Length: 626
Image (cartoon, rainbow, N blue to C red; front, side, top):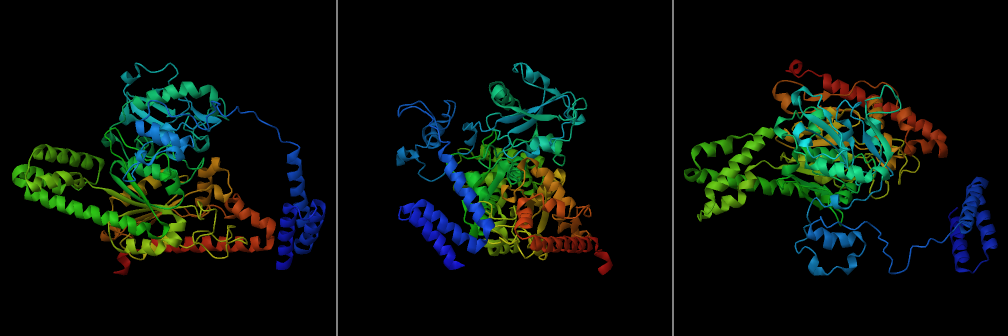
């Protein structure tokens, strides 16, 4: 067989080089293919050759103008953008980066954040349009938007005084904000048109059952109008974060996202989790990001989707390699902890200047809630005011470290290729350290960024590179391995299945004083699904038991309670329907139907066994074992 394949390749080369006549080469290739793959393979090759030949009859010249044409590959960056964006990143966007002198580039390698908003890609043919009369204000469309192009706000009616004529608003339904107005607004030039928001919307128009509270309409006729509405919306005051109920998606999603307009795929399943984290903790986040999809859409030149709020606070982000990202993040934690420790020592040392009351407030603030964080920042502001102009060396050192008195939220972020495979040794080391870090694993069950190779997170029966015949082994249970330590918070979530469960896990994990691990199911284009219905598909795989929702919280053990809470209901259906809704499973039924049948049966047994094991572990009574 190997010799025949070599013959095919050699014949192709001779034909391309003009050594063999085309017809003779085709006949020779066809004969070799028939011997190797049978007549069906030869027929497919012949069809491919015909398709190539027919393209020659359908090539037409498109006149795009001469060398001095005004044609732009990408829209020019507007004058409103900062100078660096216009003169450096704008040049890169126009694909003229080679013309930049070194003197224009940042000497320390850092780039400004919040620059993706200046791109205005205009890639969507259709964008979502909000119907306020049908909307139930649940916030689900905002939560699942992969590019943060859908936003919601509650605000005083007086803020509408200068609103554009087409700007939509309605009374807030939430009683906690009674008397205020509410708007959902879309950024038309940043939206990718994936339609995930429409698919997730639960509100149906009773007079037009095919319509929902948000519907897709042509972008071009709406672009100018909705761009004006978007600009006005951004100028509306954001709700007071301390007044929001962060355990309810409908209110929590009014928080400003500090991750927006990334270059991720339309309908991406990963980015909503990052956006959620930045909404909750972004003004004090420090992120170590493993190489992969999240590093490409998170920090690829020329623009950056991580942004800042009106006070100039936002996530600090840096990328490391697959194999050492966990250690990279641990380094952040060790350095920040030492800065915090030293700052607290200086606060005590300078009590004579700061006052015992302020010192006590700073050192005894648990910083567990938004209100606590806000108070701590006020205390830090007082410290800076009291020490301003003080030339004492200790005072000068405290001024340089004062911001470390506010709790930092350290996140180690990456995909399953990093967490389950290449970086697993380092991840295990960091989790075992007991240090207060938060790990977010966006599990696509395959190496997404590098072309769809099988990982240890790939489930049994899935076709991927290095598993062309369907992965023969079951998926590695990263969460169960982490639970064996007993002191790690572990959460398994799927935003499309239960959004408020996802929200609860993020809040509990970040509040836990120790290592936490969140494993987030992330649908991916590599799965071979309709990305528009990605969130609905997440719900389907949870209902089939392929993905479990649970929380393992060591703090419950202290109260004599079982630390494991199984938040999934028992599987409603078999795995067949949800598996064969994905091409990565379905294609095996075409190429190796008998193997597909066997692997489907084994995959169902995997799900049954795992469900029974988790159910048993979650139902155990700790008290009965004493």
